Image (cartoon, rainbow, N blue to C red; front, side, top):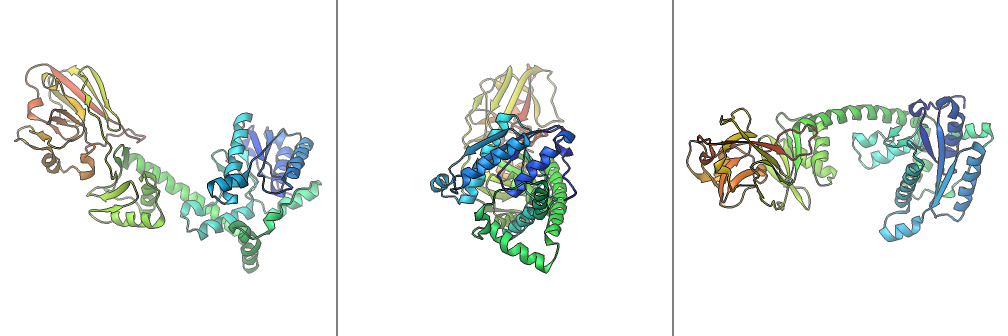
Length: 444
């Protein structure tokens, strides 16, 4: 093998090598060691003994000797995968992966490393693409593994397995063989031993083509992800009573599907996402989406609403400071000029005397309001008159005394709370929301 990996993406980094002792990870360790000076790398290596095979202690000893030869500090730990699998009911492969990454990240933190280098190569990428395709994954999954993903670094994705073994032979390095890799008793092994050779026989170069496809899918998926993040920042909110997406105008279906997964508090399968996408195409409707939530489509939005509304404890309104209603928002009160505020529904100038004894809360049975210039009516009728979406009615903050609502935040004030020539109080509402832009969505 004449070409070498480019480690410039981790230049001057502190890299922990995940070293199993197999050909792939040994090649990675040797390549990083050879590039150590050129790229200014500080190297460490870690081996996780899964406790599955009788010869696994020999793998750990081999890795220790290799690291001594390469002058790389070495860490090792033994985990009991069979015992954990028996305890949890998971498959051995799934448990081994989980415990391995947990151990590697502990080593990374203890060694103050910047990233964990993994030896996944082009053949692994082709297997991953096929596995995800077989599972019916979406565009994100079909992109397979990435060179950089969080604290994981995979610099060998552009190399075939045969190139790595040829490299080791040319350098005079040996490696350990795991006999379980030659048994087609799990999906990945079956693909490696049966499907990939058959595909290569039919279409020479299939592995390289699958890797190119994965890279193209990653680029396009990243673009859609960026557009989805921008849409969510503008057109979504999340609070104690659920979440919603604005659909006026509706986003592109590729963005909508990702936004649904991001906003929905429940784990969704493919059929549920299809059903929610179809619901978004209807003017109104409601469907059940899980044990705890349902989805409701209104004229402008898709809501994810808890089936059981959480109880909100009223908070006495502080007339010289800020009152917070957990999960809903807060109202700040200060003395101010007795001039009505008409350009911001989340700020109001009210009569200070009328606020004595009021609380900040959400709606309750029997609530009533007398809108400015209007007659007394049930709060529920007022919400309907103001065209407030039904899922928002339980989360609209209110300034009230007894059953009398003085300010339905974002909607309007009551006749008895208007400025009456006395001292004025300026009230400003700030929503409690996970939106990065901090937009005031409540009661829109």
